[in-house]
Image (cartoon, rainbow, N blue to C red; front, side, top):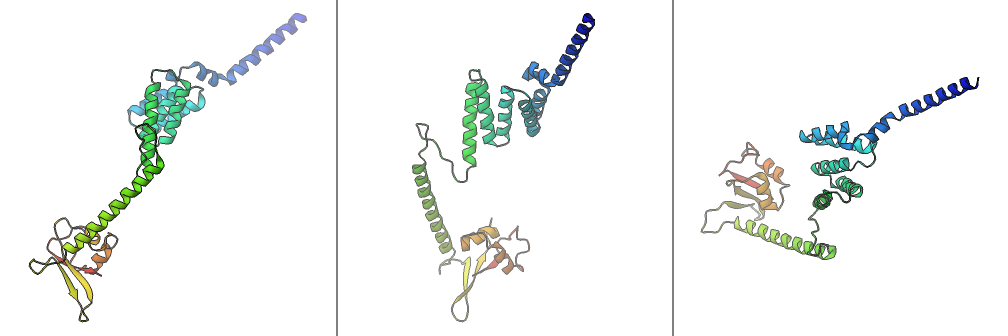
Length: 243
């Protein structure tokens, strides 16, 4: 009777162990399988070779989700984010690789990749990015002042060029006029005529007379009988410029 009870107890224990092993089979398989042999990792590499970046990224992220210490998948995910011009998650995954493999042969290369991602992020910021000085740091205040000064200079130069272009369009008594000023009976200026030149567009004409291309539609509406195709102006045609 004691022996039978002992056998029954052994059978119960064995069944319990098998149940636990079966429930945790996938997790144990992932732990035992090297990352390079993971099906999702290999599929990710295949997609990467086929230049299917987003599909490759999804595969590497799945490996990261189901495994601990997926350094190589972090590295590949970072590369995919760089290809997708998304530098912030790329920086995260590169840092995770360095955390997991700080002394690997590729750690120096990955640190350089982080610098590349930093540069890409700065380039995406509206306006010109801050560039580090010789010491590798950025004095933001001085850079901002320099950018403001350059912006003011460009604004003054643009205003001067606009003024010169407008003046050059007014004919002198000794030259053949290309821009004529029509005046009404009261002597006030009512409209301006302009002879279309090579490479002229409605946008460039609008900028020449108004300093902006936002009035190109207004010019077209005033000359519908003369401009058959607003995308292809005919050289030599005289048009009216609304005031």
